Length: 423
Image (cartoon, rainbow, N blue to C red; front, side, top):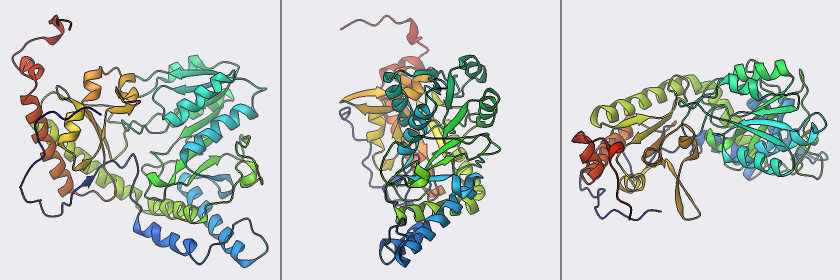
């Protein structure tokens, strides 16, 4: 990580506002806290009801199996599927791997071409890169400046060897919701299977696999106030019936697609989390949009040279990705170290790289590095948003006082016309 900047912008003896407790968590795209109601549903299966759901000879197994089947129903209802179409996994990374590798292997004789996009999660991109090494052709569609793909690009990319399109429902960094229904319709017209990584969308916005023309869908428990280490894969059973080669062998569990003893407490928790989302999603989304827009308005009113990244007309309720130009991102994060947010930079192999998603939108390194992703969620309050916005305004203002670039821009100097001396 970058070194500290020699000025402490976090020290304050001010009393905390009512209703604010530090640190504040606003990184709900990374993970969400477990909803107490979910934990309550899980508890019996962590203690007394401990049977293996595959044990068919006694009541311990029957009880576990019954709980698993109830969770299948809860998950299916949330996405408009049937219970038999839900396959349990260890999380969305496994679901994505199973979907993409499993389809690639099963339909290899039909073709070897897969289409995805450059702003996908690494669980999709790295899986596709692995398949490239095995002789598959992968097309990585570019993103437009607002983060959306161009449907015409997708049409042009398809050929008679295309077997799968994998496009995420909503982006984890910029919150942009892709035109999924349109993409799925095009795939079905061309006889191509359509997979979507819907981790950020399920439970936050209405998702219906039939109306959206989705054949295979990945989801995860810990993004919707459920437990970590459990996820699911929706696999369509008719029109078309999708076949997937298992990637984990042994026992033939989950309709032969995913062997392994089921994580019953986790599955129960995932089901409970989905049911809560089903009942409360509309009200929760409205509240998160209100908080997000309030946060954005406060920041934009107080600070110049800010920009919002991603199309805000097709957007997740709790996501706000903003760049604070002429501020160094790591210094900004250090200045707000009592607030959990995500930066536009990723630490990889001891180097600080700007986000590949923001770069794909055409942002320069300097703007990408100065970006913050706010992930508002179920348990965030208006008092917290006030504290975060006030703190951020203060820190950005102080950092800009130290920035010669900001000073030059304020004086009307065009930075693009300056010839910088090489060191």
